[in-house]
Structure formats: C-alpha cells, structure tokens
Length: 111
Image (cartoon, rainbow, N blue to C red; front, top):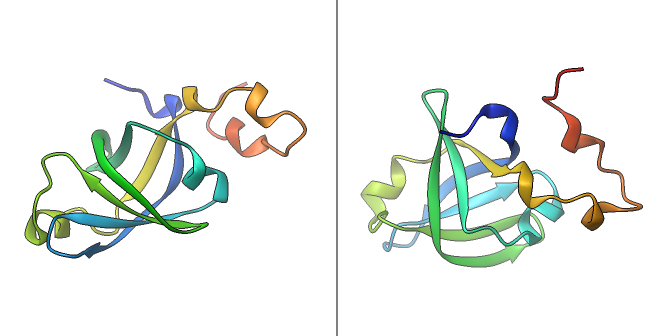
C-alpha cells in the first residue's frame, strides 16, 4: 500500500468522455499533464487507489482524456467523477526540475 506522503496531488477527474469509459482529468499544473505515468491514484474514501492507464490523450496543456484498465463503459466511469488525482512522487526527480520552481513537490513532508 502506498503512503499519502509518497504521492502528490496532480488534479481532479471531470466528466466521462464518450461511451468507452474514458475520463477527463484537469491537471493543476502543466507539468503533471506532460509526465508519462503508467498509473494514477484516485482518492476513494481517503485511500489512494491505483488505476492503470490504458490510453492517454492530451486535450490541452491542463487536461487530458484517460482510459483506465477495467473501466469500460460510461456507467463505470461515472463512479469516478470529481475525485482527486495523484501521481507518485518518485516520477519527479531532482534532475528534471533543475532551475525551475519545484517547491510544490515538498508539500506534505514533515521537518
């Protein structure tokens, strides 16, 4: 099980798209939409649940259509609307953010 300290909030799920079970994700920062991730975590009842990506289609800099494995129709996708979306912190390495403001990656750590 992954700890809440090992993930970072990347956005929120929006409405379903089409009838194949795709969801629209609205990212809070452009860099979250540009990161290639094999799974996203959706916060369900306070527990980060991994959902593996089957297809990813960028719509804008801040939004994308995502087809998750085992979510195959509109009814199933509708269950996951308006949930917080998280990415693993391990995706973001110090090298990839040199020279950029990356203080947001430190949110959630205790000193």
